[in-house]
Image (cartoon, rainbow, N blue to C red; front, top):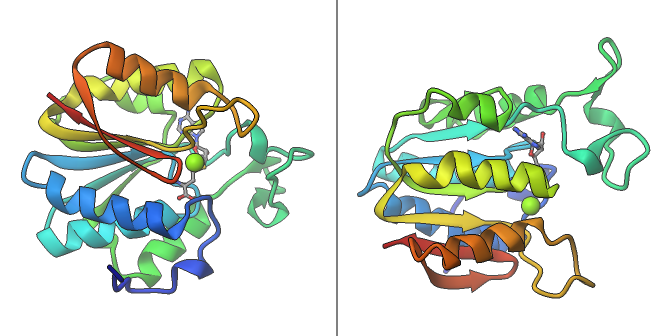
Length: 205
Ligand code: SAH
Ligand code: MG
């Protein structure tokens, strides 16, 4: 189905295919029956645009967790570095300014709570039940495991865990997201709903 977003999603820098974004939109709409939604890894707000548009529709809230300092692959000299997102003053990546600008342009500020912090720090005092957790943060095994351990336990029964960048064949990409996906299934606390591109969608049983 073609879905109407408040701004042109192609204008937002990011790493998400349109069909994956549309799947996230529908998940966030459904998940609102169970609790709020939370994403780890917002970058410039591409996934946020899909998730928060659904939240607006059902008047739910999206927590958007990102320290906005970039993952390993976004750092200077790395494959996905974008000089436009580099803050020369502090010599660090900073995608928050662009993220904010995009969420404002999309008029979604009332449905997005930016949490500008490392995932593990944001999770330390977390106590809010979640209907959807979307993990799209750092791709090291440590980062992915931390995200899984920090957030999956807050998903209520019936709620969704969506993990991006799942590559069953190591030749296609890093294995950390796939590793936590397998861990979730092996825990028997989650069942597979569907795969949409590289997006694995699981449901908390
Ligand atoms: N979902 C985005 C892409 C996310 S890229 C889109 O649709 O385009 C991954 C993001 O994860 C980066 O912005 C990076 O800053 C963030 N990130 C990486 N490790 C993190 C951590 N430990 N805590 C919080 N954010 C992290
Ligand atoms: Mg990704």
